[in-house]
Length: 167
Image (cartoon, rainbow, N blue to C red; front, side, top):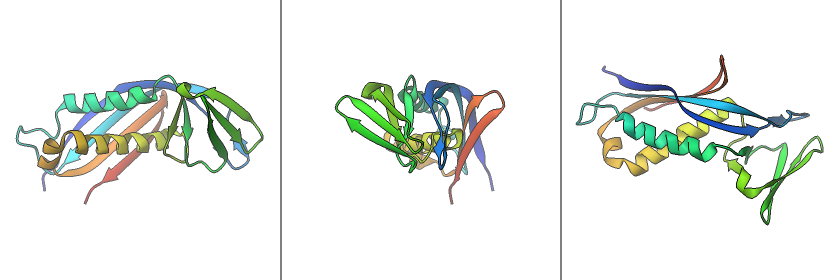
């Protein structure tokens, strides 16, 4: 069985702030200069003999990373923090009693359980897949995806990885 793939290593970047919260613990608010890599594998090439054109990947991944840039990232599904949108503000109440209020324009609420490198990788992968399938349907239908992998690096040697294997 043939397999083909492309990789764009640490080509995409965004900087944002976050904190991790779980039962009995909350990190201090801090930020990272994230670097993002993506690998895409397919069982066949499209009619132009690509898995996917690098420019398509660059366009989609740049858009996703730009939406995460220069903001506080909050996890919508984290049960240890309460997020309330009040007028032009976002109020965050943590299990430890900490309360933060931020301007709405400075916050990005992500459909994930945590703002960890692994959860960010999962969010980015699913955002990429949905956008590729929707905006480049013809190219999407020409290939047979076997795996997509996204790696989010928050510091040198510290990365979270999420991958999805297709049947």
